[in-house]
Image (cartoon, rainbow, N blue to C red; front, side, top):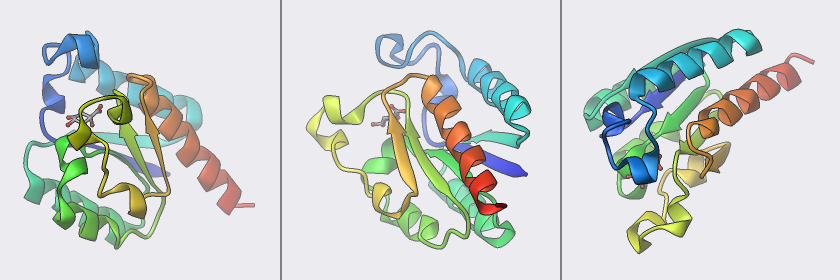
Length: 147
Ligand code: DQA
């Protein structure tokens, strides 16, 4: 059971990026956390990061073709990328939108997600634990399906 954990722009700078908002843990810490969570849940977790919209969309197409679930932090693309939304609408497996911060409690421009409407569900505001909760949700959905 492979799951892609995809991260959008600026998330590679976790740890040094606005630590008051996103915490002190680094992107490498996030990768380790997701892999370890996967091991507990019996999921093969592949974690990727890009600042590039085209590259992210390419990975979403790959997931659609291979029927892979996605845990996605679209970062700022959340709020304006219709191209990403259209790619995600082609999904063939669960899609969990995650955010480290709680965008609803922040600036007005973060209140709308163009991705949320094509996601299975959204988890936001729990720091890096948002990813752990999302991977648990994926594991539950896979277990449900194989019943
Ligand atoms: C974010 C929230 C977005 O508004 C922001 O652009 C990010 C990170 C989060 O994880 O809290 O880059 O997706």
